[in-house]
Image (cartoon, rainbow, N blue to C red; front, side, top):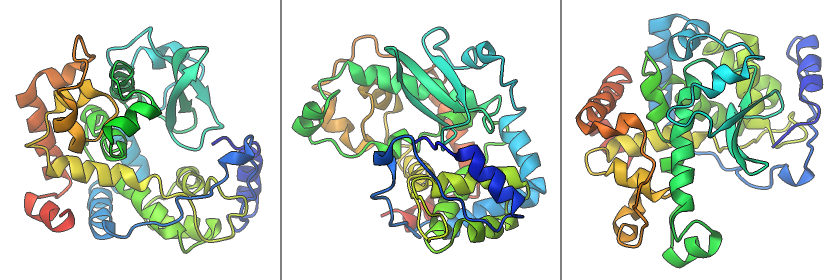
Length: 316
């Protein structure tokens, strides 16, 4: 979704001392939310625990952002962004823009894979996870389920938990914190009962910087026209949900095979592997050492206070 009056809405909001509820307009009216209204509270408790523990360690969100993503890259130096896309330099174009609601989204421009990056928010290390999404997309294009008819034929489950919950980009973060995933989950949850300005005020508990808080609020309220109304898009809850599901099943998932199969759910691995095209799939370098990769997952569990016992109570 692209907003046609994003900067205008932000200026009015800040000028009102954070009391104005933006009235968003969209370049494509069809992108206005017609679904994704129901949010989940299933993982609210663990999300709060992750956020509070992480902020207690770092003190405020600015220090946390620095630790997990390092520096904001120069907005005009687009080539430096492209070189950081793991293992696929010269294959992916990077489009820096202020118009996208999310931090980034993968698509095609003039038949070339293109990542639209939110130039106001993305940081040095965040871009290195692009390769994972690109490799999954590339591998998926080789499979008989690469189109809607193929998906229907093979009865594919939603790939969102594996795709959006993919924790591979987290491996590049020095802090290994799931705080951002948890904040996105909580923001979507609170948006279901709050206006934009109420949500913005509520998030100050976790996020001190007003520009960062604006980013979280417009992410979940994006899709609404009148943001004074409760509700929003719950799509960002899938990031934390996906990580938790992946971590719970980390000992049984064949991550190399999952990557090779493309954009599919880990639940579909067994019944798809015999029908898959597995000649020369694109595999990220960090997946080639399974022992090291497993240790990274275990460290993510430890850093975020997650245990197998807790995951079993949350996911059944």
